[in-house]
Length: 546
Image (cartoon, rainbow, N blue to C red):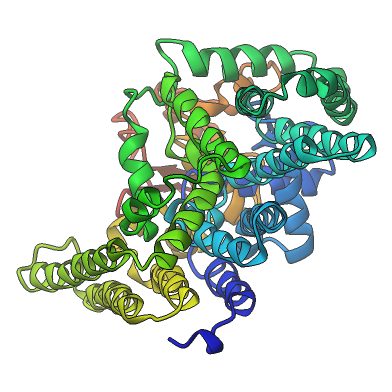
């Protein structure tokens, strides 16, 4: 690749469009996350209640409101479709990349800023969550903006600039708090305070901290008071259950050991993982840079913080990716300037690794070891195309003479995977985690007056979203809606499995039950129709026709 023909300022925006926007509507929504957040936003728009988040018209207090607002606005703009459900995550990732560009562009140089953005947007964890509807991408936007504003403020020579940038930091902290809670205030504090101590500027943060907190309070207070007026129990539940218990309780959700994030960190830094050893090696002697020190603390302290928590999810370490991009970008640039052999070695390993995966897929396919149906014969070959193109780009990066050529080759490696993911996902996964196809098949049975019952919140959200209903009954496991079902005006929406037979017998309209998670109760009468596909089972009763 010739340097004169490659301009990252052109390549990066095109890459964002191709990886983050074009594939958004191609695959069905994933259960439970995407369907849950799609439905909460849909109900917000449908009901006109932008204060209290609801899920199947049940109070849903697991998260604050900003992420739901962003998803709801996306549905207002783009309609109720797969693209709109994921668009807020994609544009939040773009916003975080823009913050990185401003940060590195000002405190390093413009070239390094483009390299940093290239690394960030193509990190595997970033690109996965940027094309998937969860609130972590939106949280990452506000945290990245807050960290950027704090660094601008710390470096500002005038009082007026500090008023401005510390005020912006407070604004972005408030947006982060409104997206996912008090964690948004903890992360900047545990990073910025050690950094200011390291820079011998502790008095500065003590002097301006009140202003940050005041702005955050002013921004947060209107909704905080509105939700308290509408639902007085909100803050008690949200603080004690969703924060204290999730972080420290022995029975916290998603409990995992302290080392849980390490393998996901390695996977999440693909494809740049292969260049990371050489990049880190060539940062020696550069750690006196305030920006690198800041990025190091920004990546390391939250990672330790999340590792110490009892409850863990892979998505939690997304805020560590932006500073890692800063560190990797500068290290790769230093290694390239020094013509380091480590970059070539890393690319050779990269090329060999994905070449071997391609060969392994072909061998497993011909041995019949892949969990595929006969109609899916083409999926392994698409996976070979993905791994093969990755290997080819790794080979091109070895031959690249310019830094831009090497960066572009690596940035493009995950592109084919995301463009073809909709066609690669096997039926076994579709029929387990993506109920859209199954519900389209059974939709003729679901009349407007039919009573719909789900066995779990994940199947409930599928019925909510695909049939645009907020009156789904729940049986079996109540999961994350247990709290909402506890209110007197919501208890009628739960039918115990042992009472399903009696409930069905009382109805004069069709009853449709969607099972996935629980065993079908033996006491259920024989349905008029029973339809199965993968892990989904639908029971249809129409007592009026009997």
